[in-house]
Image 1 (cartoon, each protein chain N blue to C red):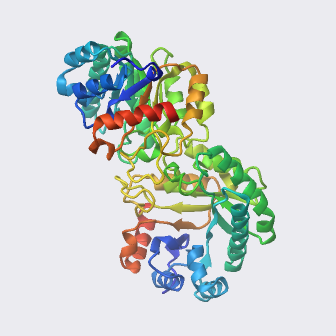
Image 2: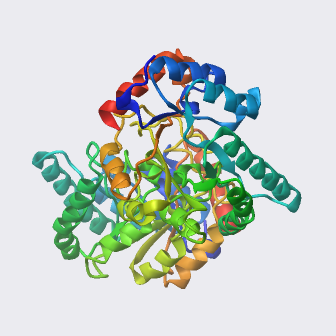
Length: 273
Length: 273
């Protein structure tokens, strides 16, 4: 199918169609006229990173970012070294896949130690930055919704992600803004403006009312209550004009035909994002 | 039973034993050696506020606060007037029950309008304050966890609650700090210090991992990952020495014998809060 120009900024984050393998997702993008994909590492691993890079390139697609590095919190030195090694591999995979953005989901606190987690995350990023820079990859710190703190990330506000990113040069570390994770924040717009050229990725989905699944219950754009157009306008006013990844983590959508989900995502993107 | 001195600051928020009527909860407090209760309005309404006040007084209990006023966001003037009238009644009920603290759960956005909700909440509090002051009742703005924004409250951080409260004299409007709602916040400790003498209430429960019920899945103190002792120490360092309400909103606990739940709450309070 001819690329659809009106979807030029649309990137299909692969977890939106978690039911597909990476080759299947690549084909689904082609059928929908999409030109960008945001693969996840577990899907890349299934076919091998070199083969994945080749398949994506051969299909005429670009990789908007790689999901995900991170999980930098660890109970002991052994686990920390394992996490470091895994993050270095994530950097290399991003470079091989032809993207310069690695999304970082920073990891939950160990036990009750939230401050300790934040310190470990900073230290982990410090250790990773030289390797990332050597591979031309920038780290995009993604603040996650505070309801996910114990499973995914001790970094739960954009202010905190900005604080972290500003410890590094802007060409090394920035932020990934996901509307689903940050929309509730009373400081959202000032922090988007502050992030400025450090915005390395922008993700969209919607907040359903009620939200019945805390981790895998996101809605398609337009079906929930997030002011998506306003947030996108703010992100663009801050200087971001890159890919917009559609990342609708929804268990029910994964049980449906993926082409239907992709078609709905395209329509929702044009209508509501 | 003789009041247990080591539980002198313990107040049983009634929703911890939602399976009980107010008379039953009063009796349960007596059996457990407790001296304070935090009733909810729907339970007060079942027996009538005058009878409730008498029953609580006759049992030798004090009311730590009344839950809850608020829900100040409304789609139209008719609903807004109804909310105002209801909040004035809540103030009067608090006064009748002998407490000077009305906990305010401010209300969710109407549709997608988060900013509009925040403005409505400020305006609603402004309209309520004169009536509250006339009845000797202070309004305690409770920030709720951001995952509850669409059901309960557009005020989701302690910073925001402090911003709101500071629009008014400290003897009129303050904040209610519930550890369950605020523990994830990277700005928590600075905002507790800032709240200072405006802290009108302190609530405890724990964050379970995993949290399987977004609204009614709180844990007993010590069973989750909140740094409860650290937060309490900060609240006390800020100047608060009032009641500590145990507010464990847990659907499973409501299906169990209430005396067992109260006994566990007492032990957990002494051990972990």
